[in-house]
Length: 216
Image (cartoon, rainbow, N blue to C red; front, side):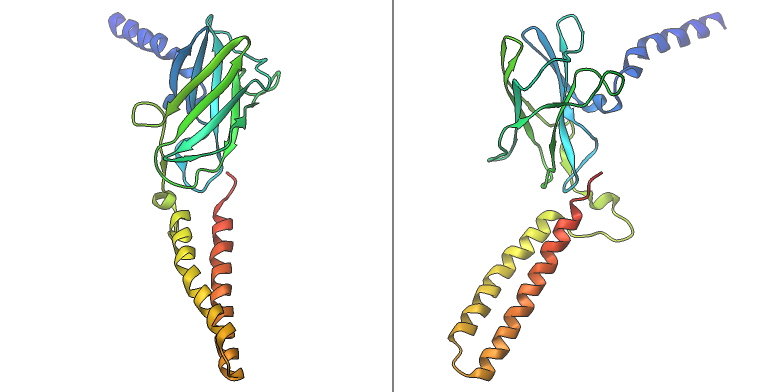
């Protein structure tokens, strides 16, 4: 009996550091950058395409003390494939008695499923920083399609909506061109009406895309 109790106490002690970490850190990646430790991942996990999220950086010095005076010397560039988002400032997500000290974030709405890279550039104190972190199964979560958790109906994804708009473009252009070239008044009115319907459809699809960008 005593042995079982000792084993249970040992497990609790071993797991205690994990209980002290913010919940989202479990899917983050860690790296030493000179005299600092960078813990990087998404602010909210799992990460769904089309929903507001953010880059999260938990920053500590070599002694494990949170860095609370970063200022505006460090930025993050988000990369997806060949696409690069302009460098974003990192702002504190904590105050004196609220949040986790050393927690810095940059807001983003990831619009496509897949792996993203966070490229940090600038300085921490007097130390130069140029570090990249990429999502994967062993680092932090990739972005996933939200359809798996949609209920009661599964709405089209942002990518599908963009594809519909791309396919509507030539049809709208063709209808407008026919309206300009039509010589008969009645025929012109009919084609203009068709163009109006096409434009209205595109507007509804675009409006639906905007509604999908829900703030969590």
